Amino acid sequence: MPAVKADAYGHGAILVAKELNRMGVDAFCVACAAEGISLRKHGITGEILVLGYTCPDAFPLLEQFRLTQTIVDYHYAVRLNQYGRTIHVHIGIDTGMHRLGERCENIEQICHIFEMKHLKIDGLFTHLCVSDTLKPQEQSYTRQQADAFYHVIAELKKRGYSCPRIHLQSSYGVLNYPELSEDYARIGIALYGVLSTSEDTNRWKDILHPVLSLKARVAAVKELLAGEAAGYGLQFTADRDMKIAALTIGYADGLPRSLSCGNGSVLIHGHRAPIIGRICMDQCLVDVSQIPDIKAGDIAALIGRSGQEEITACDLAEQAGTISNEILSRLGARLERVPVL
Ligand SMILES: *Cc1c(COP(=O)(O)O)cnc(C)c1O
Image (cartoon, rainbow, N blue to C red; front, side, top):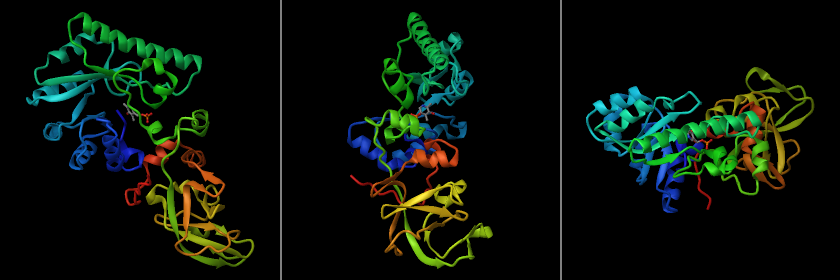
């Protein structure tokens, strides 16, 4: 059940889901109803599970677009049942993340949800919150979460409720806890060939291959004379005669502004060009003094390969003090998504 929320982690949800549909994948998860509706409007078939809260005003949309709603807790189930039309749901079970889901101790309430006339219970799931590390303490926490989840399933069975499909893993769960494999795995970041950090991605590099490159064009190349400054706030001053280029990408496209002033770089013709000055909303400046034959229209890679060089989403994340998930999911809507098969 691939996670195609946040525009498929910036990759383009329609593009990704269509390709997955074509490959035979017929279950998806998204964060909110609007994301599910967009998939349906573009012809995506199969089960679409909304992982997050849907406001009662939008209950009719769940029905209209055949979306499956997560039961975020018992009270939510009551409210959704009151809507009075059949809605497909998966019950979220909170086994220790303490975000969404009915608490695993509340077996009675969970059973009540099964009795609700208008809820069609297709699944039960929990979410692991420390499955990304294999440190002893986190391992035992994950074990406890799994045990608590399986205990709920066993109790339900004992009371005669026929158990629907169940799932606990996301990307790190699949990699680090393969034994917790059930009917679905909600795979997000790993689907796109990366993990949250460089360290993790390197560890699994034999089976994960990043599918996304981020590119921009050179808009203009110009001389910057020694002593001249450039960009907003004139935060960069040339200490020698230089050649600089303006690129067609800025923080509105998801390039973190914290990569300004030399904290980040781009690849052009196999060379590394440091970002100079402040990144603007729609553009940024790079030092291309060392790059011969550079001209307007040339392509710069912000994520991806150029010659022998490579910049990964994890590199960007490290420079910006975050994880690759955030870098990818914040890639801007106006970036053109170009499938390269
Ligand atoms: C986002 C999300 C996922 C996917 O997580 P990854 O770590 O990207 O694989 C799975 N389950 C839930 C509940 C989520 O919110």
